[in-house]
Image 1 (tube, rainbow, N blue to C red):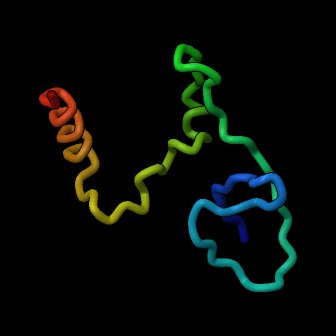
Image 2: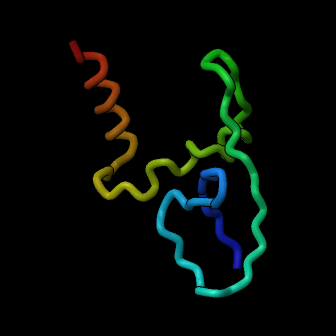
Length: 83
C-alpha cells in the first residue's frame, strides 16, 4: 500500500493536513520529503518542484468548484474589478 499524505511537523508529531484512512496499529514506513517553496517571492522553482509542492492538488477536495477553469476565470475577473 502506498499513499501520499501531506502533513506538517509541530515539533513533536507529524500532523496530517486532512483525515487519513489507514488501518489501526499497522506498522508503517515513512519517507519524509519537504515541500519545496521559494524562500522569497522573487525566487523561482522548476515545474518538477512545483508538481511536488503543496500547491499541486490544492483544490482537489473542494466540492464547491465545478469547472476549475471557469472558477479561475471568475476569480481573475473578480480581482480585476475589485475596488
